[in-house]
Structures are given as C-alpha cells and as structure tokens.
Amino acid sequence: MQNIPVLTVGERTLAEAYEKALVALYTHGIPFRTQYDKPDDPPSLDATLNMTILEPLADPMIHKAFPGGIEDLREYVMEVQGLKDHWVKNLNDPADTRWEYTYHGRLKNYGQWREKQGQKSVWTGPFVLNQIERVIAKLAEEPYTRQAQMITWMPNLDLDCYDPPCLQSLWYRIVEGTDGVGWLNCNIRFRSNDAWGANFMNMFGLTLFNREVIAAGVQARRKKELRLGRLNWQADSFHIYGKDIAGARQRLFDRLAGTRFEDRVYNFYDPEIQAIYQEAEAAIREKIRGYDASHSA
Image (spheres, one colour):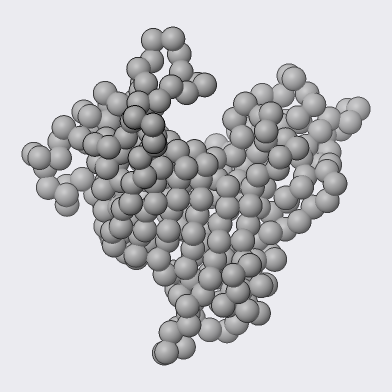
C-alpha cells in the first residue's frame, strides 16, 4: 500500500453521515503509527475524508456512538463559542499546564498568544484580527464572495507545537434562494480528526457555531432570513486510534447488524433531549468558575 485512501461520504443528517464515515474508515482505512502511541498500542486506522451533510440541523442529529453525553455536547458548543478562551496558558511559562489555544480564541484573536511578563499574564503578538467579525461583515456585504474564510494555523507557533490545532479553516458562501431566503454553505477542514474520540462533537459544535454566531450575525446585518445549507467536512487524517478500536467495535461496529439505526441515534429536537441540553448550562458555568478559582494565572 503506497497511497492513503480517500473516503467520500454524503448523507442528509449529521448522525447518518457520522456513522457512514466511521464504517467507511473501519472498512477501508489503513494502519498507521502516530507520535502519540504508547509502546503497546496497536496501529491506528487512517484515511483522508470528504464528507457532505446536506441538512446539518435536521434530525436525527445526534449519534449515540461518541464518548460523551448531551451535557458534553452543550459544553462543547459553549466552548466553541468562546466560554473557555481564558483557559490558554502562558507559552513562556513551563509550569503553566493549561491549553495552548482554543479554536474560538484563534478565530477571534488571530495573531495573539499569552505570555508571562514579570508577574503579569498578557496577550501579545504582531497583530490581532477578529476573523469572526470580518467574515460576518464580508458575507453581509457580498454573500456571493469566495473570500469569507477563517484560519487557525499560526506557523510561528504551530510547527513546533506538541498538539497544534486540528481545525484549520472554515469557508463560507451564501446561496440566494428565489424566495428571499439565504442558505449559508460551509466547508470545514481539519488536518487531523479523531474519528471516534472527537469528530462528532467537532461537527455538532461547529454546526451550532455556524447557526448561532455566523448565520445569526449575517442575518442581523442583512435583515434577511439565513438558514444553514450543506456542510462539507474535510479531514486530511481521519483516524481511529489503535487504543480505541476495540471499544468502537463493541459500541458500534459489532452492533450494526443487530440494531436499528433509529436505536443508535437521538433526535436533538426531542423535548427530553432539549431539556437536558438547555438545563446543562448552569452546571457547566459553575464548573468553569471552579476551574478558574483553582487555575488563576
């Protein structure tokens, strides 16, 4: 084998596309070692992925085969919208063990990082650019533009970073409907995407980010309804770590023949699921306050 397989998946909903992509990876992925493997870990399964979700906000939206619950999805949505941007560490302080970045931080404050200067923790860098604001403004002015893009990669930091950003870029363009409704289409690219441990939460969180931040922001400026159109998800490395393969078999692959798809998913708009999702916010904010109290910079 000299070539990394390229998987192409297309489905109507997030849950359907997620399961189909996992099955394609399990069937056609090739073994790879990674720099994160422990000595006894089996090889990962790896491939390149191009996945299209036609109706990313439609039910069934949630697949049960991801490492978390409804409360975790709510927390990740809040994280992608900026709740944990202050959790990043001072890059020049070896004793600081917080995160190197957040996706939202890279999008909103591109060009900046945190450093310790004397007793103070400060944001520094050659410039600061709020890409979220710029993209919303550009789409509102020229919905047909091909230039509405945000990136996370900062080569001065990330080429030597142990765990650099997996998310690389988000690209947007609006299709104008004949009824006056606009449709926000989006391409999202990951350089590395943990298919079992992170992909579903990534897709769910960024879909809600697109609806609640980008589409809402553009709609407010244009005074025209804007809905989410198709989402194209691109992963250079779409993989299941070797240590996770046995669990994935047990929780999903070995159950496919004996269970109905309807029993492997949740409807996000089901009142019971919505109640869990909405009620989780208070506990999440309290968790953040507790972390902040014990990890002050």
